[in-house]
Amino acid sequence: MKKIVYFGMIMTASVLTSCNKYLDIQPVGTVIPTSESDFRGLMTSGYTSFPAHKSYLSLRTDELLLDESSTDAARTKDIYLWNDQNPDPATTAYPYLAFYKSIFYSNQIISTIDEKLTGNANVDQIKGEAYLMRAYAHFELLNCYSEVYSTSNAGLRGVPLSTKIDLEQRFVPATIGDSYAQVLSDMEKGTALLTVEDQAKGVNYRFSKRGAYAMASRLHLYRGEWQEAIEAAKQALKINDKLVDLNVTGSLLPNDFESAEIIMALEKVSISEVRSSSFISPSLLSSYSDGDLRKGRYFQKRGGDYVSLKGGENRFNVSFRNADLYLTIAECDVRLGNTAEALKYLSALKKKRFTADAYTQQVKADANLSKEQLLDAVLLERKRELALEGLRWYDLKRTTRPAITHASFGRTVTLQQNDPRYVIRYPQEAINNNPDLLK
Image: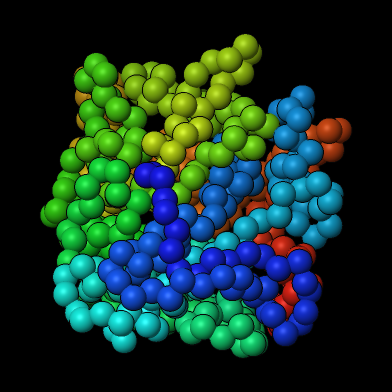
């Protein structure tokens, strides 16, 4: 991501714990936005504020092992052991406030841009991005801190909604149903305003129509709305349906921001604190069969263990990419009973990820699978393809919620099947600042 010059509202997390400041966001200085560049600066600040929560989510999954010899292990061990209730004071708190910082910038744009500027393609694009950022931040809050959407869960506690600039507002969590209604509304408004189909490399951390469709596809997938997820994914793929071919010498990693399949390169999914305190788990490594080129491209042996090659610098930031869309279509088609279509998208991806001989074997084996077996095969492919991009936790949470066992510093802890800890507890600091979070 390019170096940013900041404009507009500059925000910090206040050290105060006043119950009147429910989000604890304080504007400490203001440059009143009046030009397109001012509003673009505000939007860029919203992108820059977006948290690196997905890197921490990977610690909760079956993807990583904790490196007890790491100096960063003290900050990550309780995340690894799902100890959200009473973590060690040294533990890095799950991001919460940062989502609302990004939302704050979006609200500033949405509430003032029409007063300051005459509408044109650039203005509409910035406003559209603001709506989509507000939608995406609330969506990620829901993914972390609330139950998976279903008609039976719609009345359960969702997340606090922030749709206006009001530091005195009480932020009581809305229901899951109302939370998603706001996300869907913002997503629709934002997508309608966008004028850029696909962002250029270097600024593809910004939303485009392609990114908006990819976000819609993921949201509908997580809500169990299979046909809607397929339709949104295909809209994105109409703009660009390319996949990186790992058979080609010198090919970029698929999550490189310059790769052919990147849609939106926003989120830091593998930060140094997590990378330095973990190794790749045997469970993940063993999921790659012979002839799968990803094992050698995604991971590297270091001593007796393996580490990831998919992160560590901004060029590997990723929120959406085409392989994810191929797998979304494949999964949803299986669930709808369209197995032939599912196989088409699954095999298209595998052709770019396996050697020619291994690909032929994969296609033959997949053709003989039952519907249930094919669904398992698609979910396994998500595990392999999207490894360490922060989506594994969400996939586990929305599907089987399996038991996972982690051991660290003499402790062995099991996340039981259907464990309540699949819904992450709000950080204690956030609860202290806003007791309404527990309502």
